[in-house]
Image (tube, rainbow, N blue to C red; front, side):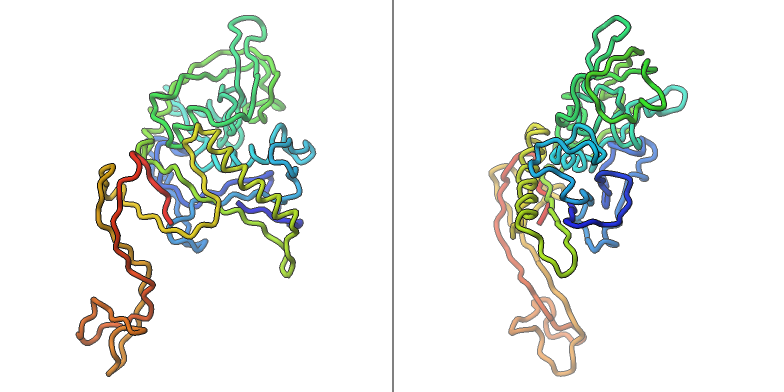
Length: 358
């Protein structure tokens, strides 16, 4: 998550944005079933990441956010009804949201659920007031103004949580969108930002998770093994040669701690963000192998080893340590650095959990 405390001439056209760096998850979009290989993204090496970085969140200038992360952002900043926490949660949700299509008997697929940039929920979709836009829409059943938008940006819906890999499809209730809404126009379309208190008429079209799965395929990995713990780095950029103010650091710290609590609460405890700088090593066996809950296995981790060619007459090993695999055979390398090789027991801690790594 990148903030900066000075003006940057960086025209993005967005208040904040998420850029995917790696994705191997299927069944969430943007490409539907039959085109799944197009969903695979991996250019982490170009950013200096061997295998862990999944995305970048650009949040922009820190001053455009109120000091209180729960306070509404001024409308002249270009957003409506948003707080720093809702924007942070929104951008974090973009790791898997929101691009699912629906099956269509004529075209094959439809974009009826989608609104702005085809990466947010449609204004006319009852998204249960998702952070990913849309609204909570009440169907009054009859009358010239049958539908009413009542709430916006409250959390992540059950549909969201399925796509995030947190719950099974069976826990996603049916919803609906409104086709041919009476207020649809160039100025008020599916791409409109969430807004409550709006009445309109139109054709109700019910939507089930089975329809989403028909178009997109099943989510892989599913909720039983999908990642739930994610590490976020809060970064504050400053001008070269300057030191950030204590006020800016304190403000970002408030955002950081509040974000952890907000994401847990907005996902019913399913999403586990970690934002602290912690020196730790996590040993993960799943899905290559498994550990029975309460049982133990032996594991080992080689943190690092590099070699250089062996010179004539030079002893094997480095720093008094012998390369256990080199022996006395000619032509083997000398160990320049062995950080450590540790062996330990590992217990089955939690059922159906997967940690995100180091």
